[in-house]
Length: 602
Image 1: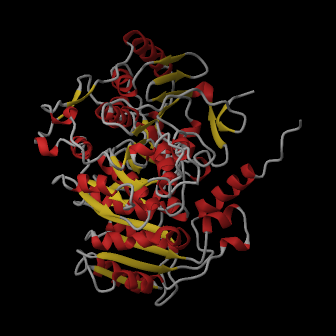
Image 2 (image 1 turned 120 degrees about the vertical axis):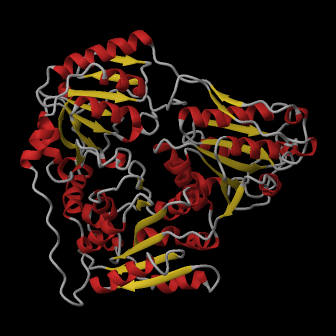
Image 3 (image 1 turned 180 degrees about the horizontal axis):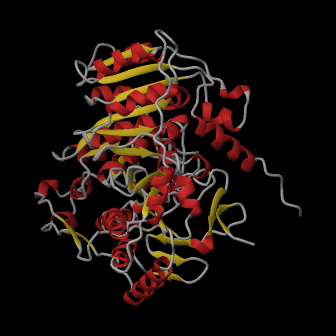
């Protein structure tokens, strides 16, 4: 029986999601920042390390255990504090910041703040994003005393928060003495960068302001040693892969989301240039590959792929997947028509050739670059795509004052995209509609597919926009998701951001409704523009608009991109409850079938 990738019976191969820093084989050296003796405190050391690795903004919620730490952090001129309305949104913002900058940081207080931010940190872990989660902890004198403190669960053991973070961070450190604080901080930060995962760093509240000799010495540059491929393993993997691909008739390339953690985006483009293979991306890798590339054929997402893409990928006699994640969502309920004996799976540090050998300690970027030099050019799959491709038609024109349709909305969003914009798609039907957008060169694109936490996009928009002020973020957010995290619209206004938010008001959790109908998917409707106006309260630059038809949408887009281009623009779009993409209907039915499988016989 054939083994299928992304099928219910498939056994996934082992993979290693640890990212390799840096992109070259030479050490990455972060410039040191000189500190005067008065600045040689633990808090200033943390601040300088954050700046060294590229953090220019921290996202925080103050609490009595982290106040002295915040004092020290904001004393660093190159570090800006962005105060958030909730710890959850601070974590989402740090995660969105990391998507743009490669690293993010948030600061919360002990337990009540830490457990609130935990969900966002778990999302960063699942998406392979390095976030430094700084927690202001109890006074160092309280450890081991059997005292009961506020902001805890009422036990004298303070380890509950730490134990929670152990499952969703790659490293945890509790700093409650100064002797090893320097080492603990540097180890945590370097681990986050090396593994591209979040770390937990708890700092006792009485330590940030105290000088220590380890912080007053001449600053040492921050150096990360590179990961290296095993030379013999690399050569063997390339030889086996080239032999397999060169005898194929119509091979294809598919880029997956772990291309980012492997820092292998340029290497993948080089492989695409050299091979001539048709190139698709998995949905969560959209935006990682240039869609202007001559061999690009779209998003491969099984039954809900972009037009004619799945037919080319699934009919290929060989496919190379670089950094894939095959879960129930990306496999459309385990229904992908892929076979393991046709697949080469390249993970950040591991290569598996069909059903045969697996090669460990082989970095993805090294493998892709070496393979590009060994492949014979083969454009057969792309030529087949050109033969069957039929340009997508435009949705029917709207009648005057006809209620707006979702396909018309996204047709006009497409016209707004440029290299100076970035798209953020919230969990829901925006996943599917935004996948069909064609991204111009330089246009960013982000969504959270692995974790899929509703409400993520509000905080992520805040963080991403703060990290890339040269781009204008266009966020597509459903009404149900917005209600979870809406309050940090306030922080966007206070931070003078100029994102455009399309609030899709269709009366509920549409994606859940297509998986399983129920009255719990219907939400209380809000007057969303009035809500944002109340938050604005005349303080800052914010413009809101409610649209019900195409004519109103066009006026809103024109205003948002011209006279209101320097404002945060909030456009509430009224849509029919059942107006969804056809892809959501198909995907929802298949995911529902996967969820409702009966138990296996015992």
